[in-house]
Length: 218
Ligand code: SAH
Image 1: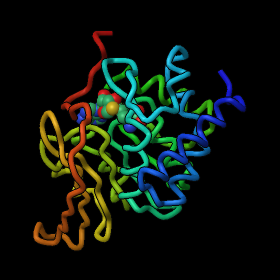
Image 2: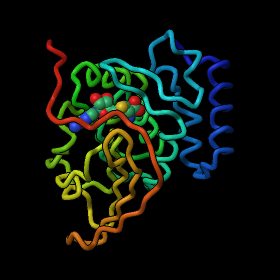
Image 3: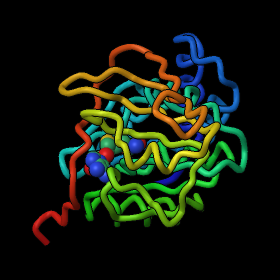
């Protein structure tokens, strides 16, 4: 599949709609104008790729809806060259948006099938993220600390190991809760628990963050 003028036109309309919905971060809007979301979906969903909706991907998971990707990316408030850990690679779309923002991206996925597919896809599209098959609860201690951590699945609570892997001065964006979650932005101002500054950004709805790897029975 390619990135045709038709797709580019749909994408510009998507970004205009995001702007109308209140996304004001121009670097995020620019990144989302660049990344061809339809290439992160199954071909038959192509025509829905630029509507503001979550869509099914393999393994019963979903690609986050564009406004959620924009919102989480803007909350992250990352500057070029920062080291970012993403939990939940899924389709690889959010990963690509982080790459297009000029960040050094490390991404973890627990489902082998999604890990294989998104790694291949990101490489083919020349996004230079480092992809890992692993349990996001554990993070990547060997690559820590990170300037930013973005969790794209619903965590029952803020993952403690990941807070450890966040730099002082760093920011984590994480949806926390059960069936529905609340979007939190946590700024780490120092090493003590009392140095965590937490802001709430309303309800959201992500697939759950689960423990352990999933090889899909293969
Ligand atoms: N960022 C993705 C969103 C995918 S949905 C995108 O843009 O497409 C969330 C993903 O988190 C799913 O693929 C799910 O398998 C993964 N996930 C859930 N728990 C996880 C964990 N503990 N570690 C890593 N990935 C996890």
